[in-house]
Length: 278
Image (cartoon, rainbow, N blue to C red):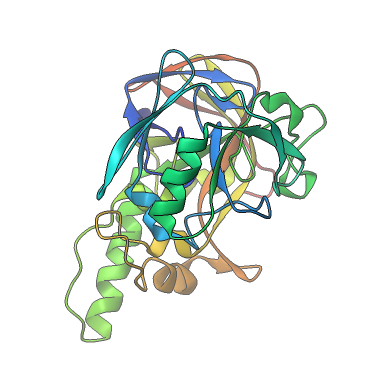
């Protein structure tokens, strides 16, 4: 197996940035999900509720700031966040640092309601929720439940086959292949058997060892087309038919790094151990 793709999401819920190599920190990829958009109540303005967040391209700047672009809005350079601490509604985190006021106005215009951009100054302040496989001392950025999400190219190909078969059964036009972008992975592996990742307990990517904290349950975010930001039926309809248990649908696994290190596209991927139930 090898590492096919790496994606960093500088801003939670915005589009991802493909990179050839990345540094792994205890809380995830360096530069991944350190920024987020919240409402007046401190809760995250997440992609499932605000699909237009996917239209935003966010890139980390060397000085610690953020470059923002979105159709219909002027590009904006956000300086490093030095504002006051503000309450946030993320599990395991009580506050973050407010960004520049111009960023608040930019996102308020984009979403059509009050919004603020915030920065997670120290990811070590946020522990992984034990309900999602977190162990003492493990930390995470603004990502939902684990530092990294891994998906498999062969698993997506199998899902595409299921979707095509279902469309034929329903007399629908045969769809094209789904983009892996819908699943918002950090790392995509090539060369595994379809859904083999379900049974992994530990995996090595390049020089870095990871623990599989849990399988990834999927929500309506995966139904948002990355180019139009419009919600559809797939892939949840088909996942519910072929990959549903415990009342949820599943695709991919969540990873926690054992130690810092570096990974690169093309690097080897090795299964170190498998779950006892696999």
